[in-house]
Length: 518
Image (cartoon, rainbow, N blue to C red; front, side, top):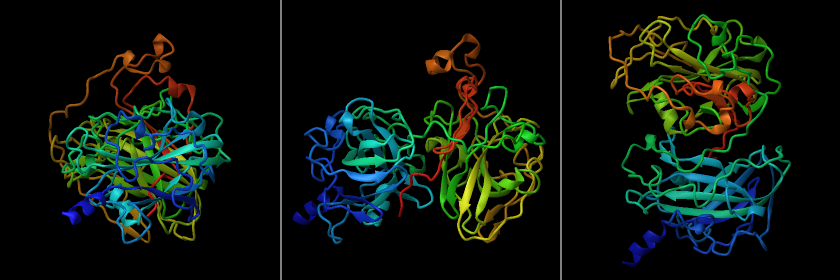
């Protein structure tokens, strides 16, 4: 009986140490007092959900960890001491990891908390974030956003255990709060914040959850990740003020980067190391990641790169990523994108020669693709500076030119259940030092009834009021498309805020992505 009790308590956890550059402070240094020890919070309406503290969040008497904006914060979780022989927490306590920040002056009161990190089920590692933390001896890193004001902050790290979450009130929350001083911030105003408690409800799909469900469909609870409003390394989009509209002509020059002119270029380049991940995040507009694209707009996600000096002209585009229909999950890539709040991580080839590049991300929506000209293309381009010691300059294809209007992956009638015959259009994916071949055989185009989608339209009142400044700007038509933005690479315009078609989408890049460092 005693052994069973000890095993159960090993499920609980708390933050023990924090630091930068691999140098950790003393146990509980920089930390607001935790009155629960390693025990969880189970009431999402409790003010203790903020930091597991009953004594307020003033930070009085707490050492402040000094860190630069854009620098990584090291956090270490332990069960009850720093002994390596003691588990971080039980492996049964599967679930997501989240990190929030709030100005220290707020003491955590009001709409002040913004999310800077989240990771749930990792589709590549096929593991939950909490288990990855356990396997990494309790460590994970989070990047402090560069685009926040300098000043004192509360950093709230949280693990959410779902082993009992199949019943209401069964989810276990393990938050702890650190006090940091952020220097060299690039912004003058605070990000949009949310209240804690208030960000979660007992019936949220990521909180009331049966862990026997397919983890690929898990939705991380809480508000969207903070993503800066502006930057200058993304290429301006087009057109006619409707910057989320698709390209439908495979021969159009607009297919390159969804712009009628490749000039002027963006004014900056986002740095990224070869072999590392860049995080792409699609949104509708107004940074709404809760519904990045309509469920009816199913299809593949594809990413290309080209040397920047080419300006996208000629046989210069090489494919670095693609995903279409997943036979194992019976989902389109866009379905997964929706479940992950528009976010997708893509690896820059490790052997790529250092230099300046264009990165072109693309969604192809197939809801109208049963007829010629019905496929909808949503490309966007961003300028990158790739660092590393690689020497590879992959051969490429021209865009336009890579696709034909009758290619089997473009002229395609979707099935309601099985799309295993779908062929992703374009060239093979370039793999570091290798080419990954892709089947190119023509696929039959069966006559099928259209796949059911959402309601044909949404009333103007469904939109945030600040997006409708006059009657002629009210939304019209179907409501599904999205745009691409970047955590460090986004330029918005007055036209973006006037968007009238909710179907169209753009993308955001988090560069580098706030990922678990294992």
